[in-house]
Length: 163
Image 1 (cartoon, rainbow, N blue to C red):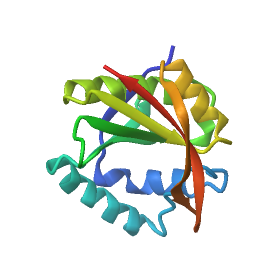
Image 2 (tube, helix red, strand yellow):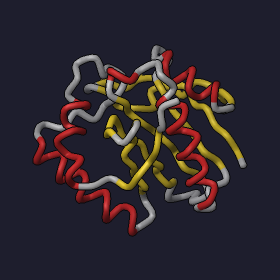
Image 3 (tube, one colour):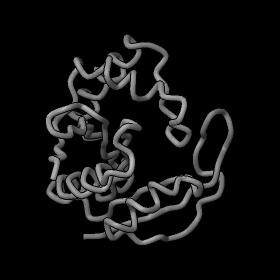
């Protein structure tokens, strides 16, 4: 079986992330960097966010190849809650990569002292629903108009796992 691993993101990931995130089939992921330079700026901010315990972002590798990213956003009002998210190159969709990355990410989160992990997703995002279920997350409900995506507010499902 192929190996999925997480490592800290690097500035050198910008070009590959830009390519992955520019895919027009990424309809459920709102981050669309305008350029490789814009992606580098986002990555630079990520290093500062890690120091401040706001976000902890990782690269997803598959047999050593960079194929996506994931992270944990720390709730700043309830610092024991983290929200996780991920993106994977379309070539690797349906291969269990997001599921494995989620399991690795939750181990990191629980070691950091997170007690509750949340995943939010658009109801039409069947892949993310499968990931949440495979990883043992519980659907808590639908949050109305909870995200801004492509200029409009949309409903999302909220899934969670508690330690």
